[in-house]
Image (cartoon, rainbow, N blue to C red; front, side, top):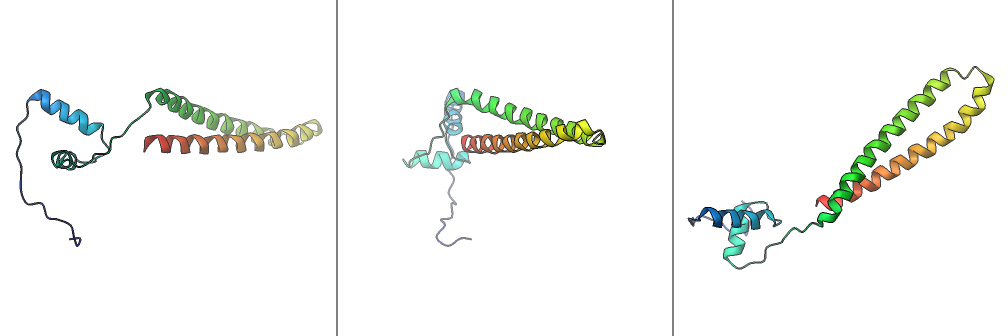
Length: 129
């Protein structure tokens, strides 16, 4: 057992109506507390409770950005497969110049897709905290 941690051995039983229980659960879910007992203890003892707030207007944006990240990843993979297939026909002289040009474009695209994915993942991680 951790030193300095208080042992909780006393029970407090409280009866609530359905309406009261729903209200307590609503307040608990809006808080950042992980356990209902911690939430109730803080409320009963008049200690501050952290409230998790979300900007609902940004929920749609996060959803769209996540979809965009997935779509960009798919496009990059498809582009990569197409270029690999074209490398198989590089025996034809006309394709060699095209392949070099588009290989550079492919690398730029994949770099941008990766960067966009990282930015979106970072935003989503910050938002879900």
